[in-house]
Length: 253
Image (tube, rainbow, N blue to C red; front, top):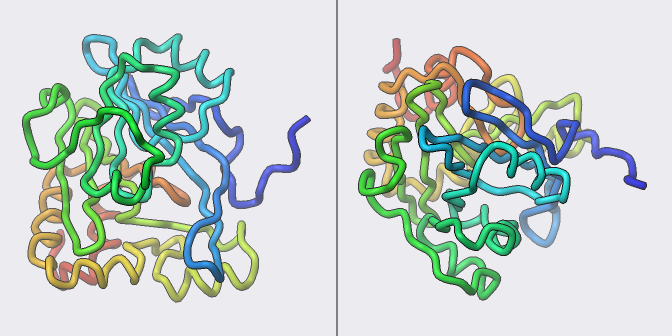
């Protein structure tokens, strides 16, 4: 029998939730991550896109249960398993074991972070083009001093898929000290942004980050899916302009 659901989770968990045509999210379990103390709780979320040939693009995999695997199998064959930044990798080996025929594509430095947890052949996401999904999904690696995060834009549904570039924790789901930490970190709903500690890791790459954000805004996404917290079902372009106003200054429109 399963226990109580963590208040920060987004039930039902470990099941497909339709977002748009050929696009689903899965809300996974809450994990604890961070310094030895205090560790913060993070709800997890992955995105699945079905490509025109029927194959599945699995972004930032979450916990794979038997029921979820049956749901995924009903959608089509898993073709690509994506690790979008160096701290989103933990469940990838389990998906690889379930779908050994799928190609695993990782952002730079995941192997360094995983320290043997990923011990099978993978491919690295480096540039903006040259991928089997290019015709349907745009790829945008953005490199900071700590990590590269890879943003993806599903053209058909006008959906931008991010990981940690925006976090948006809902205060009503958290304890008082978590509310304080997320407010200090600049990641509290309704004004979720890039975490302040992550912004510091892009200090030397600020022009490149700014150019990447302009590219994302130029895509004019209808929705923005993020890994942690409430995601944006509408007005995606406006949400990007709001979330990155610290970087863009007076730009926008």
